[in-house]
Image (cartoon, rainbow, N blue to C red; front, side, top):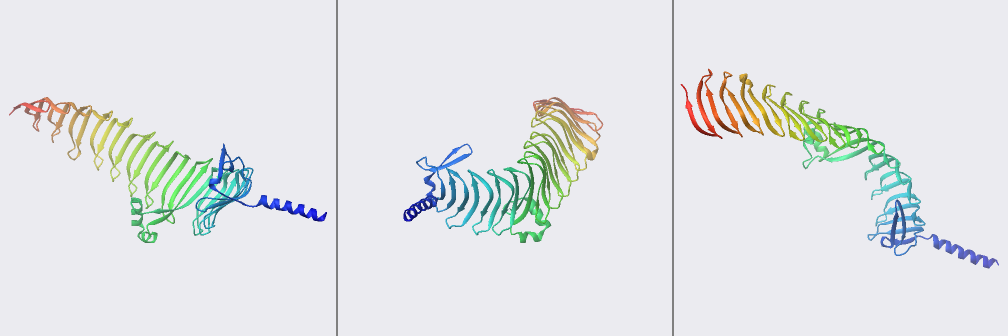
Length: 394
């Protein structure tokens, strides 16, 4: 009787050991059937669901060591490369990642760590370089980005990386040699309900701020960019990923050089300034075409030109001034972008020197020339730019 019981027990233990033994498969032997978010793993060519402990390898020898329960991942999951180096590990429950997650560099040092909740990243996640230095910190709330995010970046300063770095090294000549063509910068962002929200910035480690942003959401924010000397370089506002409002750019000395107003990414008004800070010219736009008043000044702030655009072309009366002589230079009427109508040119005595008519950009009809005292000197008759007669007066 005892002998018979022992035999039965041995058979049962053998069956248990066999059923719990690890099974070896290749990727080609596994079929994944997805039902929405749920994935079921089965043997290729059958409806048999994977159940128990498996190793599944790819053609290069990399493999995963994991557990299944009725076709779903359930239990400890580990991935390895072809040299048996551990690459990552996490737990599954009923097909979802849960609890602690870790991944590793090929030298064995920790690469990433964090937590999963109901299959989604949750809480604080940390990333490390292959020397073990932390380079990124992220925060999640059940898969949604939240709170403060920080990362350390290595930025290349060569190969046309831009004038910002040229100026930076001009101000920090010793930094260029130490950097070896790269510079460390840190970047901070804040999130709410998965979207950028609040303050964000980027700065050189132990150095100047490159830019600052204040977000309402991913596509709506105000932005400031700075020169390496700390002076403001650019200010802009975006709404739904489009420029909206004033866009201001400044010189290295902090002087306003340009002020442009946008609406839904379309330019509406533009004022450009001299290095002295005085206005150079001012334009207005409608439907992305020049439309409205135009003004132009010299570096002293004295008016040079004034007129109007319509549909992208000059229209109406345009005046040009000679400020050094404190006088008007000429007055010309435009239509369709070309001189059309009356035109007057003035002399040093601020009297009319030449007057006549333009037609489609050409002198046409009777033109008159006067001396400094205002006395008529000549009369010329034109036919679409060709002089056909001339009369002189003494």
